[in-house]
Image (tube, rainbow, N blue to C red; front, side):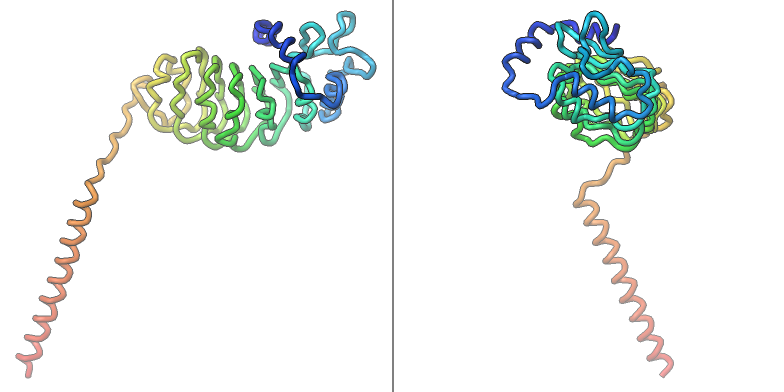
Length: 274
């Protein structure tokens, strides 16, 4: 139902865009899906994906494939015991693709290059074993993205700064990973669902996220702020540079004076002994 609500609006416009699009696709959408299937391990759940058949057929549609007027617009492949590689090259051949769901499978390794699919509106990868850092600019060319679910994986590093600039973002779920560092300032009015809990984030919660409950941030011992009832440590004020220079000069002067005094005492001692 989530995917259906997501891809329902504006599909008439999508059909027009696809007709007028100057890009040519080297293989049909059914061949692209079969290519994608071959990249999976344990693909028994996709037995309905067979050659010489239509993935959007009313009589025998392919499991997990969402269509509109014969156009593949989404993939809902959750809880299918899939693993292996997700062939993004195959996905790029599906012109109308707007939503991807691979939730609760056994995929692992770095996040696939879904950022090559700039028209995606939703990505659901929760409940896998994806790991590693996500490049800061990963989402820079994904301006249409509205829903991003990466929860319950093993992602590390900082939250990609480009995610904070997704102007249509409505849902951002990154809970139960190993993200660290500060939370970027996400000032997106459309954002209505946020969960960053159970990571390794630290620092002050940005004011732009103050509308969300404390539960969105819990499980991050390094976070602070009024929302969590935990006062942030005050920053230590650094003295101006000129004051630091004066202090160093004063210390140098003291050292020189001590050296001179020592030399004078030594010289006086030698005279008295002679």
